[in-house]
Length: 323
Image 1 (cartoon, rainbow, N blue to C red):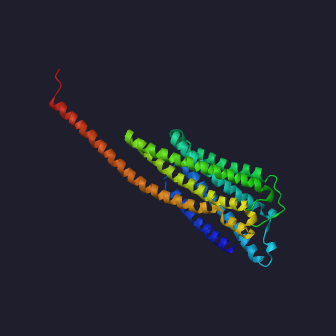
Image 2: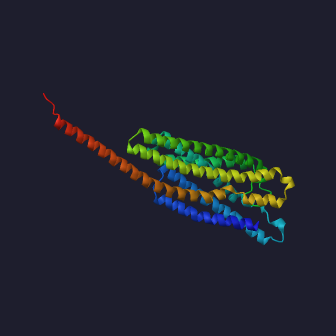
Image 3: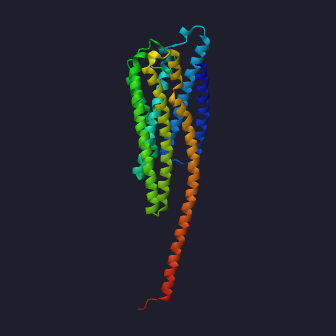
């Protein structure tokens, strides 16, 4: 267990630095639409809060483990003493999943109602953020409204015993929805890819081409973020579920050790800032090359237009109209 806490602490504190870098990158580089940018920033802030909560829970558990090393029965925590940390932990956990839904809907709106959505980016983003706060709050009200905080838990991110079943239902439903969103985001990215190729062949308007290209890049970044969340949360949630099925034949220490490692959102909060930073740098590079290409195309078009006008003028001089 000590190794687990040490390993997760490294992941958590590394994620703080990565989140700072990603936030600075988003602040300084205007590569995403306003609404997408605000939603990504809300995701990073939520990730930092979640990581800080997780770090506090683990430091507290480590202190208990050291303090009561010779008295294992006293290592566990009363559920009542974990109320605040537990609520904050679960709210930020669910918030993260709703962010994925918001980002996906944001991409759909940018694709299908681009002109209208572009006129209300901040209002749309703040509406999504309010939804991201309310949905987890309502879910937690349902899960914990009848919770009895009289037992003991190994870590403060464990739900009370009588709320465990509802918690597992919420978690399984959340993971299923997240996988659906991930699959839909992949489909949408493919649609954006085909749309951008079609725009290149059908339209010569520079703005239309560039907007399609920017939408493609943003959709790709969002798709990566959603898929990473789905893989991290889905992969790690399977471990406790499997262990729960065979809990009778698995030693208790193994069971709790596996759950201590299987904190998918901790890994997701480590990888998402990396993806945001990487995709931002990639978008900057690709935008620069695309702008240069569009500028060359525009110059070529102007040259052809001027050449055509010159030829028509020369033709009129050689073959003047006779009245």
